[in-house]
Image 1: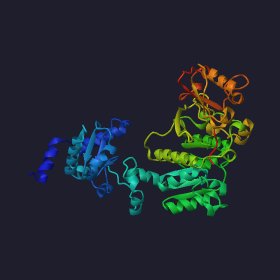
Image 2: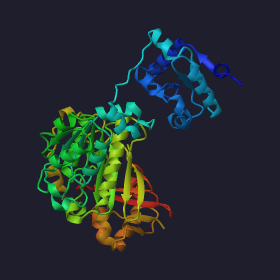
Image 3: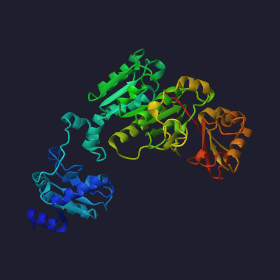
Image 4: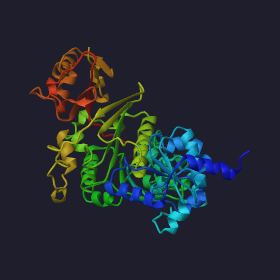
Length: 397
Length: 91
């Protein structure tokens, strides 16, 4: 029978060991050349409490006890170079051995672990702590490596502006609030009407006649006290749009008219803020993400509003109640991805959803660098007066 | 035969269908074929000069015809032509 020490010794003999100085060189090189592809994964296999007291910059955290169940999500590519560490090097050697058995091809261990790293005076990060209640509330996020504590912290720090507390805004506000987005601004000048309640699930029967922003605030505050709701009981107009957009990281466009959508687009491009866009009618929805200068803007996609007979409103034509639910949640999904910096945002791609046939269609959308009057090359928006969008759209009609 | 996906606002003009099969080997032929069979669609899609209206986007499969050859863009027998006007609704 082998002793624990023998087992550790055997594990250490099977893995390559790196001195902290070498690991620091690797980290400095990775941050210096800006190439994420060549950077190895730094894997912290210590317990949660140890990790919270300080870890290597950018380390991925998978406690050794959860290695077999979580490592494939945290490091899906088995050919990826991984440098594991613990507090010394024992647990990391055992973890590295397990990873080799799982087929990971390039796993090394940092000698002396975090203790030696810190004693040498090398830089480390101390994650901002979630309260015990937050750890419990967001536990299902913390279990997903793509979110984790860092992602949750980004959500808590994020400021999202929801334009409209209606059909699209209701579900996205609810889920963004539940996800712990720290600041939710809501712009809407309307009051809750009985005809809204077939789909605007953030409101309820008792709130008919109340301003929508106040009704939304009550629902959100009851759902998650971490969220600060900023109620903007107004319409987006040329005078307030820049101030509104400036205060937020991501804009969720759930407006119900073309003038607001064009105005919002132009201000967001000027302030370089991403807009998560959705629109709905009947059984059909459209969704895309506009990231200024990285992809197209709303005017690249639709340079001109259609005439009125080609642009009926939901009020005039009706909408299936669940449709804004589906599209609004897709907006919330894109918003969360933008905030935590994970996944492939829907930039340059327009997603169409048909509820009756349950079909998704994806179309390509390109930035019109030559012709776009807003994000085209050489256009200086700082010098541009915003157009009278009401007139633009009225003229089209 | 190419299949044309009809947006909600044009469905009343084509008897409520969301897809129709229209013969043609270019986008122009397909749209004119659509307008011949369903005259109400013609004015909405094409200008009096026969150009594609600027507020309507048309895609062959997933690619905008404006970054291809416009109305001259070739359409294969199994291709899908998507007609897409902007929608504003959010309520």
